[in-house]
Image 1 (tube, rainbow, N blue to C red):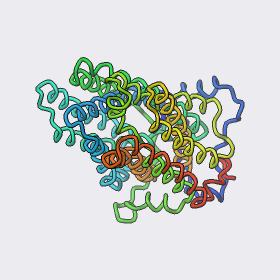
Image 2 (cartoon, rainbow, N blue to C red):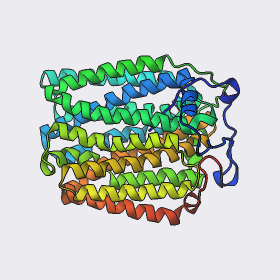
Image 3 (cartoon, rainbow, N blue to C red):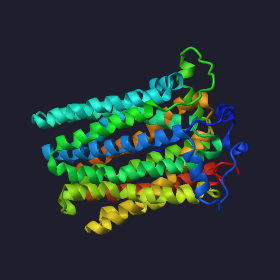
Length: 443
């Protein structure tokens, strides 16, 4: 999900004071006017150099990561032709995030966040180098790809929450909602390009794809290593059970935040079809690696367009209703993809899923980041990243398991129906979320 960068003025760097329940207070950030011209907020973002360095670093890093995932999935399916193994790749990427959530939160809240991201990029460069060697020497095996999946998951357990927590450090609060949307546009642009490039380059061999990934990780690491921001003095408490669990308690005690991130967890958990795309590409839609690249890029294309629109016309009213409606649309489009046997129609369905998911992402990230004081952002972001990882990687495992039982079509159709049920259930389970009016101002 989206990051941001740029050194704000000193008064903007003070952490937001701890807040009570989001429904019982007014936010300190005034929402941008609905008809504000795009040029003004965008130009304001460009003036923050740290934000732009982080933005370009994200662009390179996400492109490399998406290329790596396309090659990894295609290589695994080439080796095993197993939906179960594709699902295991997703599970093994998720488990480290779950196991390291408390450790990652402490590290992020105590160390320089830009340096943590740079270290994560260096680690991914090493992973790409291992895959280059394995592919060039034909040493790649099912077990090796599983080990690589664990390594990637371990790196992402630190990288994703650190990027989330770094964003408010390089932008003033007044620019954060638009910064998140603009940052998401860049990330989604990379997600569009990455799979498509990876699919085409794979024709030259997986080692070529992994070499390109290594180069992009180096570029991303150099850029983020140069990010500078002024950090407000923090009172570092001794590590204890209380400090370790502070992020979990923070999320638990805020029903709007808990409802939003758990909604994403269950919706994408049931509705995700990304892990099965190699099967749909080869066996149902009858396309090659280039088709797989386009299928993986389609959701990001929808997300890219939507994020650009949200930068121009941010959600200012009926945020809860918009969020739940977007999840329902995501479920319906997933259902349509599962039933489609037409490649163009499948692409359209995936574009819609990406657009609907982006609306959910921007709303959720704005809520979480604006409602969290800076000294706790690392721990809260780590908890949030577990929900995100569960919805993506664990969702891929769920898709693989149900595909092994019901077939790929049955798995995706069941997931789409499940997402629609979740969207309806959350209206009753989290009424405060459903009734939320303004995104940056409590109703």
